[in-house]
Length: 461
Image (tube, rainbow, N blue to C red; front, side):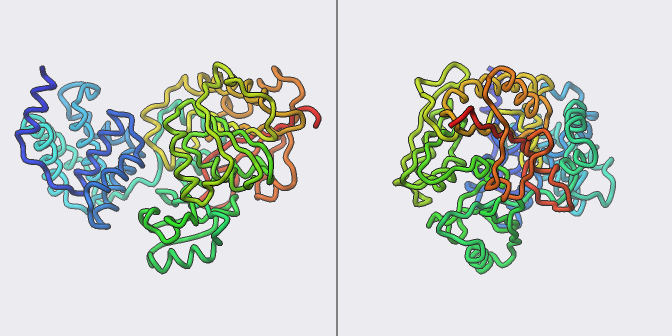
């Protein structure tokens, strides 16, 4: 009955007009309370709100800035609550997070404007009682704010995450992952076979004069963009001249080394970003099977292939739980890719909301899952074929330790990187593991996510 009353009170209040702050609050609530991905939730809310570009940019800064420093801002407002913050109403929590970030890190905005509008949003959504709580707490946060603070340009992580990263990366790589470079990272576009980097960059620059463009670091078909706006509105998108795909994910697919006419299995394919790149590489004479446990994700592959002009490619999809079995598939594939489920800690610069979901036991738990999937994946590789294992995590448990366990259980695997793959500007370490992201070194602020890749050849062809 309490929840019904809350909804009734919310309906009795006038709806707050869309604004940067109301959008940010809705997104933060969806991320924390409903497990939404920040990028997708923000995209959906901005699409509904139709905000001016400046307000959309502010909403984006609030969402990602708050998620990057959640421990700090939760402490900032938490000390002023009269009850445990864990029991807060979801909208109120999101509003306190949104406003506290602005008060602590966007101090060019008048504090009274932040507080007043946040209180109005809470009042419209949850009634005067919780609006009063928001007002009282945020005025105390505002009084404690340090003048002249700047937007958060680093990621605050729990102590166990910091320890895992330090163990796997050492310094200064841990610092590079968490505090180095500009945030947010650039949007990565993947050029299709019908486009060139120079032509696409010229077209985007004409349409978006403020856009910042540069080539990728490890993928020869990557174009990195900042201030380019919604990629679906860029020239060439409708014509299929590019896809949106993080540069590290592009490199993973390219590292498989797929050749025209080959049979490829893309396991844990998700929405099929790598499947599309692989389909392009093998051409119409090749065959590609995209496998994922979630059939709904697989349903998105065919429309994307069609948009990219690959609608006639020989691509099939199968929903299979690879922790249970192979769904009757046989060892007929020339190359098999396993971009395995993992903690995703290598993607924190793009997806800081992961810290709301990952726990201290997850690296070990997910390592077990990865070993189980790889053990099935090996059964699909023909003799002499290639198996590529990748995780977007820098932890030791999820990369080299999983690879070593698989080799101890499966005979006939030899780590191998051929010259075609090494031409991608990736070099395996002494243990045969290719590592991307902070391992690449240098001052490049726009390195890809932190991936670890191991590539094996199975027996003799």
